Image 1 (cartoon, helix red, strand yellow):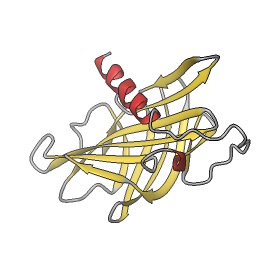
Image 2 (tube, helix red, strand yellow):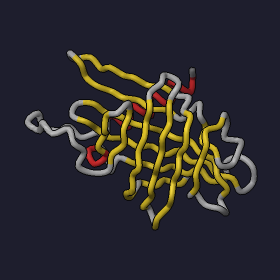
Image 3 (tube, one colour):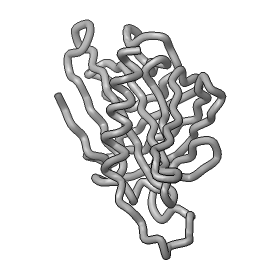
Image 4 (tube, helix red, strand yellow):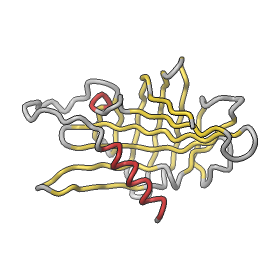
Length: 177
């Protein structure tokens, strides 16, 4: 439960960075990089900064291991969506690779299923409606193209049956801790 609350706070923090679009803009089609949650596209260009953050925690776990939290956020009209993945990799090999779902960050080459989650938020009749789930199963791939430019591809199904998928290439905010 403690992890769910932390993730909710992260999702809320990401959600508060989304720019508001004009009510006159009736086009829900994404203009920049986008991903889908339950079939709905979320435009990452509407998030600040740029809809994607990669946090790398060096020296996490055994010697030479690092962990990373990858967050993508976007908007579709008045709805905000985000996905978060936690991966474990060897520093010498770099972050690029295909990660399968696993139960822990103790293994190299997995994303932690239980802390990888999605959330959607929407204001309906003056109150905030939040949907979220963890327990992602599927694949997650990250490729560092150059500098802060990454390609992130994923196709996962969460515990509640929601499917999230995407193939995004763009510059990310990279924070090394």
